[in-house]
Length: 376
Ligand SMILES: [Zn+2]
Image 1 (cartoon, rainbow, N blue to C red):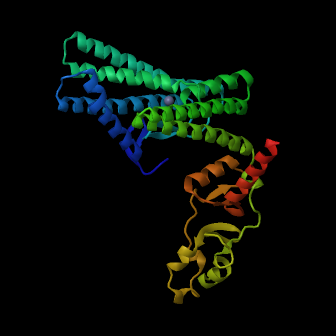
Image 2 (image 1 turned 90 degrees about the horizontal axis):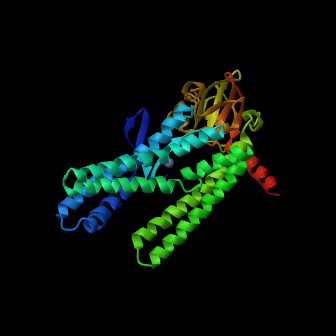
Image 3 (image 1 turned 180 degrees about the vertical axis):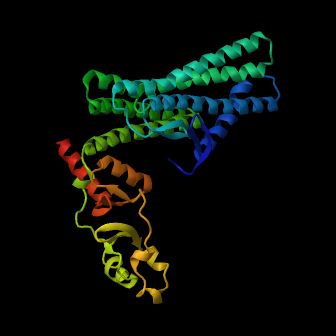
């Protein structure tokens, strides 16, 4: 995503985060409520009242988005899919569900849970607004409740547009998947709908911009571009996943890896390994077993006059899970690990024995050749 993301709190065991761009959305919403919607709908109140209503409305929107994403997350967790947390950002919220559902039924319920939750909130806020009015309580309270009823209805309707990766697009994908039993075909059509809908929003945004509604026009333009890109990316990601599924790391690794014997002096390490190969890190081995990894950073920590007398095995650092992978592991898992840790190489092991190196560029090469062959 764009820019820094901050962890806020936890709800039901899910970490709730906000991206800096959420702040922009919050300000925009508060401002347009205080200066636009509320003065228009409830004339003759004090300006401070409008701002107070707007602030409450913005907090209500925050709660509504969270409620929507929490419902996706709870259903995902019930079906055993790992959820990394919920992030609020410029265009609303996203539940970071870390695996794709294995069957259409799961995808269907996971996707539709969000719009159902929003419809439920819309009904609750609507009843609240009606009762506040009936009880003769001050107008601003009912006003905010009415706004939240409307915004939740809008969230439910917008998200149910059958355009992947919106919820409605996922529902569409689940239905197509169920009908034909072909996930890739279902994803292709749901993504095409997503791309088309994205372009439609871009066009509407431009029209609205030309008509003089700059902020609204800009807004739809950005959402349209974002959806268009996300729809394409969703399909590519599935292609990659399917291409790698069932293939083990062993198939892609380089078998005789450049590993440094633990007894090597730092001077030899720098001269014969660091200078000769364009790698950042080298596995360090003793009798073929992995004992750590080292690079220029480790060498630099030792004064040069001690380079001859210090062995690399004594200064190398531990190899964590972020830098190694088992030869029999699924290649998807390895790719995911590289992505998560921004690593371009993983040390491949069998037990503690080093058996190879897995390079990102080899995986990408395989994927590229495969997709070129399939386009024919
Ligand atoms: Zn949703």
